[in-house]
Image (tube, rainbow, N blue to C red; front, side, top):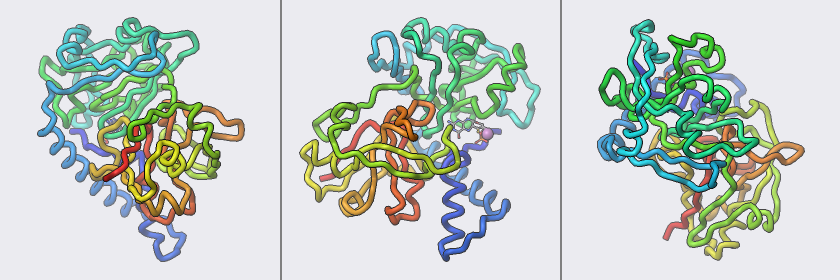
Length: 340
Ligand SMILES: Nc1nc2c(c(=O)[nH]1)N[C@H]1C(S)=C(S)[C@@H](COP(=O)(O)O)O[C@H]1N2
Ligand SMILES: [Mo]
């Protein structure tokens, strides 16, 4: 059985540390405490997903293709379109089947190589990032996607894949036929409920109210640099990194939005944290601390790649007081919505 858990690689550990250290201590939580928190977060996540599943029946599920494709446009494949593409079979063990690790299943799905062919890979693009409903993400090398039948599975033993088995779209790797790929892509790469396939990295583009701001627009605003531990832990080092961007407050005034509004920040994934509440910033915190839309990082101001949750990441400075601020970092930021 698969235990759903969005937290393990994200904010749970930092939340745990924050709770234990409220009194100013430096003690780290014990493994037992972490395990309890992990379990709680995992149960909560399973509940949220079950609830969402009721509201979102499988045939409504789409797959969005974005980023550096041949035409650079965002395309949405509907469930019937996906079914038509799902012509490949891969017989393999399921890396997440801990009950019966040697059991071979017939997965039917869409070879990722078919998507690469259909949407086109411009020169220089080397990676594909898969984003999931729960903000989980994995990045796979195009070279490997062209070499091995790595598929977005829609069926397992001729049945739709249940939500608690990673469905409706489950990224699977042909472990049985090509055991060597296990070294490169462990069970953590078997992504559940995939919603987006991103070619390379998108161009920054943020909707703010009725406006759309691109990188050139954002670059006109006063530039801020934070030195921070990134609040989510895909790819980034565990140490502090420089994040460069612009304050949310300045982005809002640039778009003509009044400063007394609070703002909801949305990114690609449907749910980011243990509850499915949107990430909302109050006007006070927007004014009083450094909450930025980061578009570059490091000494040499590199773009934030898709494998790092870019091109636009919502980041919080040390001056932001909220003890839960690490839970509020947003990957793949797409929109700031002022609240009435
Ligand atoms: N969408 C999604 N897919 C995911 C994960 C996740 O949290 N969300 N966890 C990954 C990891 S790290 C592992 S080991 C396996 C099993 O995760 P689980 O132990 O949380 O079930 O699924 C992988 N796929
Ligand atoms: Mo994992």
